[in-house]
Amino acid sequence: MTVLEQPGSYRPTPPPAWQPRTDPVPLLPDAEPFRLLGTEAAAELDPQLLLRLYGQLVRGRRYNTQATALTRQGRLAVYPSSTGQEACEVAAALALEERDWLFPSYRDTLAAIVRGLDPVQALTLLRGDWHTGYDPHEHRVAPLCTPLATQLPHAVGLAHAARLKGDDVVALAMVGDGGTSEGDFHEALNFAAVWRAPVVFLVQNNGFAISVPLAKQTAAPSLAHKAVGYGMPGRLVDGNDVAAVHQVLSEAVARARAGGGPTLVEAVTYRIDAHTNADDATRYRTDAEVETWRAHDPVDLLRRELTGRKLLDEATIRAEQDAAERMAADLRERMNQDPELDPMELFSHVYTQQTAQLREQAAQLRAELTAAGELPAAQEGRPQEGRQR
Image (cartoon, one colour):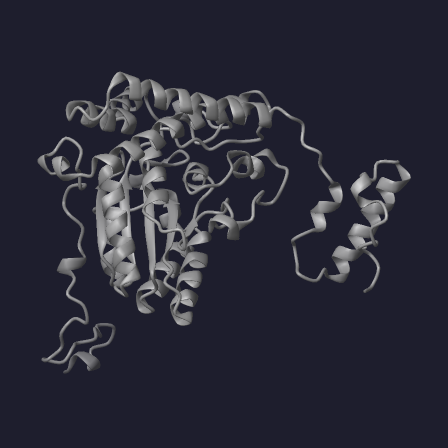
């Protein structure tokens, strides 16, 4: 009886000459996260790049503490801090060329700011004032994505379209470890690999999807190992080593730009603060665990490297801290100003041509505001959205 004749025991048997379409060995990540700082290889790193990374890390840390304070003061509805993850944020933004696109998650406002976005605009969504708060095309930063992993297929679509058009563009999509449990993650990686789209996936593995630890999300040796199942390389990197993250991402971006297809990068890092201001992290992790990761702080790691190589002195440290304080003061001043909100903007930028339902709802709101004497001056004299055009 052949295998096909044995009830319930069929397994597809490849022909004798069968060979895998892709050799899986080169796709597998290293057994340990890749590191540069504190190793002999660090001596070969560009000092100017390291100093630039350091300045961005210092400002990024101050930005996180200031945004957290604004949340406690009621100036932000919510803030997902990236304290402890600044190396991933900074490296992701600086690994891209101006023509490339960044696809951030809700925690990646710092990456958007390093990319050139105004901090106030980056926080507008979290303030609850606008759907996005900035023009994505100005700095090539896609809207901050609150749903888990839905930005990944968007990044693949843009990258694939750019390739079809002949545009020299790479998309870098950021996602947390929790997002790798979503179907969008699978769909994005599968599509990107099949079509060899010029996209880089950066997974910031900070240990928890809110309160769910990584061990309850996957049994894979690492998240980077998931890449081999899609036919793309996986890279595992120390997410607190900003030089290592920058090098790995830069190599992945260059590979994508040269037509080599996508890469999945897992950066092992840690979320020092709670998930958001609405989260009590003490319910699912210990203070001792947090303190262990504080000893591997990304800012301190780079500062030790720079001072050890005599590339950073006290005057430069103070200058970077002063620049960070000026940034924080400007952010604080502008965020403490009450915004002038126009309720009619709820209906703007939803569709190119408003639907009949939106026109009806806009007309109803306009009538209510007019009756209450609360119609903004900017809306007076404008055509009513509820009218047919």
